[in-house]
Structure formats: structure tokens, C-alpha cells
Length: 227
Ligand SMILES: [Zn+2]
Image 1 (tube, protein in one colour):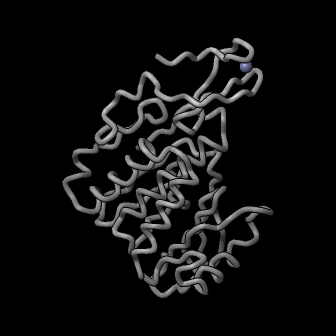
Image 2: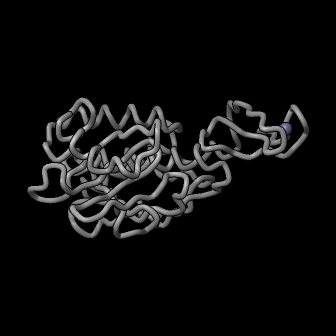
């Protein structure tokens, strides 16, 4: 059984986005936790019930190969990997196995990546790191698409740039209607990504990563809804 009493000041501690860490909101001490009570849940089949309120039907998602790849990566990311930086490495590993020209990072299709980053530069803050670009227009070549950074998910077209900060994430909507699962951040039609061309593993890993960033960047965030 894990004690949630701060060893430093006796305050009641809270979970952080890192599953192995608790934080005291009174003295800001952080403590590493080896095991926690809720670690007993079935990690291969249940999305961490402490961090998420999920309406996703996991067994139904597993019936199709794209849904299966998506949910497997998401479960691994949030249940096992547990930190945004490590999940970012996992995402890059998945992307490096794809040579799809609709997707780019600093090292995969770097020119396409640079064009996209320039396109969204107006909303980036100093020190913000763009991680991945995904084309959404059929012949867009960087003119339309999504860019995920370490702070926000951005969607843009030729007219406008829209984004949601990771720290403002309260829900993710999985649109699994077609063959391509895509994620709407805060259920917004305008801000979404699907990581086309990465076998949908990329979509699951990217969704897990932005949730982990959300918990790390917004200490008051209790749960994310998955709809
Ligand atoms: Zn304390």
C-alpha cells in the first residue's frame, strides 16, 4: 500500500502525470513511488483508470487491424511508458520505420518538416520544439496539415492556424468511423491528427504522448476523458 502523506510536511500528496511520482501541493516535494495500489489493473486491456475516464471500446477497436495497432500503442504509452519524453522516443521509433512522404520530422523528410514548421511559426513560443508533421491535403506538400510540438497540437490550412495546448487537454475524441483512426483534441473538429502512413501505431503513440505532456504540464489536471 502506498502512503500518500508527504514525508516532508505531512500534507496530502497528489499523483502527477508520471505514474511513479507523487507531488505534495503544499511544499512541492516530489517522491518516487515504487508500486501503487492501482497498479493491479489489467494494463494490457484497461486504460489507466486513475488518469483517464474512458468510453473507448477496446475489444471493438481490436477487431480491425488499424484500431488494434492504435489502441495497443496507446495502452503501452499511458500504462507502461508513463513519461512524455520516453513516449516521444517511442513515437520517433515508429515513425522511422515509415517512409511515407505525408509525414515528416527533423530527420525524416526534413525539407517538408521545415516548410510546415515555418507555416506554424507564428504560434510557437521560444524554446518550443516541433516534433512531427503530418500532411492532410492530398497535394499539399506542407501547405495543410498537423504539427505536434512538445507544447501543443496545431492544425493549419492555407487560411488559418489553430491549436490546443497540451496543458489544456481535457478530452480526446477518437474518430474511428472510416478506415483511418484520427484524434480530435478536446473534441474539436479543427484540431486533430491521424499520423497517416505509420500504420496507426503512430496515431496511438502520438495520442499517448500528448496526454502524458498534459499531465506533466498541468499539475491540476485530474483526468482526461476519452470519447
Ligand atoms: Zn509536503
